[in-house]
Image (cartoon, rainbow, N blue to C red; front, top):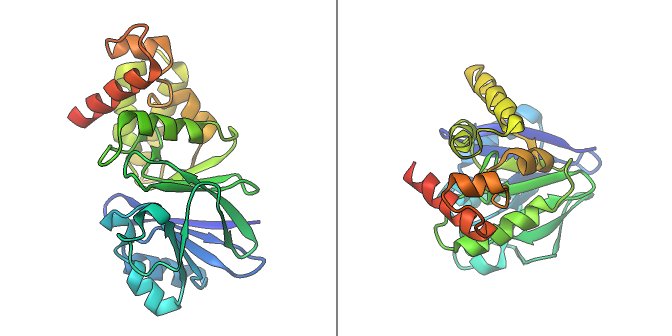
Length: 254
């Protein structure tokens, strides 16, 4: 068994606590701000033991040092970003195992949003913490990597089992859904999901977790190999990586 607490940090960053009841170990996935994480821990009664960092951006690491001082938590972060993340105790790379109590994650390197970005896949629990690589109905902006790198990274995540639950770094799903409909509007699965997202947000509810199966069926950035999506971006018969790049550029423009 595993317990998860999901909450907002700031306007749209997700805070996520992962708790192992068997050992009492608790991890925060990233640490964008100390106070909301401390509050969530107080509400649950859990004690922070681990900080699992996906990438170096400030809205994901600003709370790392304060939480480490307060709880003595172990900080695990991508080796590529060792010089850009404070308080690191362990660096990890592709295929490494990360333990939170009795729970074990495999590290997946996902360059694109940043060059050192990683995701954490807890296979036994069917959980993926994708940071800012794969969003619900979207993907991260390319600040450091290339479209080819991001396309490769997304395909690594899309290859995980369909029932894998996806916890991403931001509540961007409503805007992502409206964008997706512009390029894949004849997809009935997307239309149904977009309507559900509209309803959830109108009710003030979160739109995550999603699943890998849902993303494969409805996320246009994972569907760049579909002829309809290629045609919609003006690249009929285009290679999926080129279609993906065109989609990402369109999203950048709004």
